[in-house]
Every structure is written in C-alpha cells, then in structure tokens.
Length: 167
Image 1 (cartoon, one colour):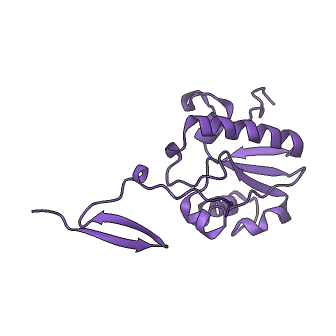
Image 2 (tube, helix red, strand yellow):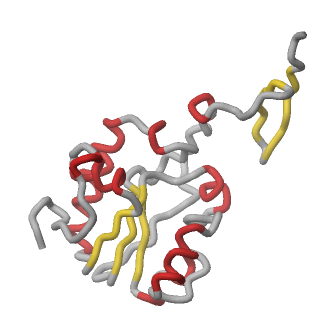
Image 3 (cartoon, one colour):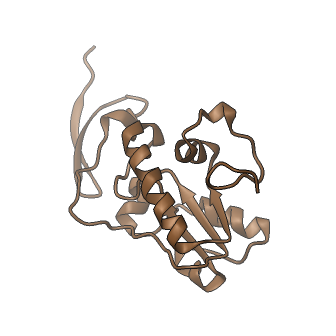
C-alpha cells in the first residue's frame, strides 16, 4: 500500500509529509537564510553571568525570544538564580545570553557545520574579551566543547577558565 503524500503549511513554511510517518527528519529541514537576525544576543559589559548556547532553535528564532519553549527559564528559577520567565528579564539581573552561531537556526545542534562553530567561537572570544562577564555559563557540554575545540568526552563539569586555563 502506497503512503499518502500531502503538502502542509506550518508557521508560513511549506513542507511535504508522508501520512503515517513517525516524524520529519531534522536534517531535512532547513530554514531559509535571512538577511536579518530575528533573535539578537542580549549583551552588555560586566555581566554577572553570560549564558552561551549552540545556536537558535527555529521556535525561538520565529518568536524573537531565547528559549521560547521555557526550558532554561524553569531551570534558572529552580536553581535560585531568579524568577526569570523569559529573556526580557535577563539584563535586570545582570545576566546576558548569546549563541556560538547566533544567526543560523536549526532544530538540532549537529546540523551546524564544525567550521561555523569554529568561526562562532572566534567571534565569541572577542566578545568575551571586550565585555568581561564575571561568569560564562555554557548551556551544555557540547557548546563548551565546540568553543574550546575539544571532544565532548574530554569536558568535565566545573570551573574552567574561558580560554582553557583553570580558574
């Protein structure tokens, strides 16, 4: 029996799906490259904490809000770092947020090429030197591994100097 193929519209984008398919492969989905960034990093000098992720998720990109699904904000509330419900509250608490590759939304971090991460890490090092945040908090071991240029298995949790030296 041949599967039915339908064209669907979701959030203004057209895509084809096979009726009964369990899910669309993440690598087959790529947002068009835009000439402007819908999700701007939230930065200023001397932040208490700068959160750094891989790259924007399309859901956050479309809404112009970091972690629009709310997962990071729930973690920060539970940790006692503040009653944060979205990125609009970050600067009031002395926090900021950015991504290694801030201008390319993808559903999965592995969809970003290693060269893009290398360029993003270089850009971020310059921003960190200029902005001098007190703490840089990577939102995952993989984000730090790309920044530091090491394999994920070689990254330990804890305090590590941003430029590779111990703190």
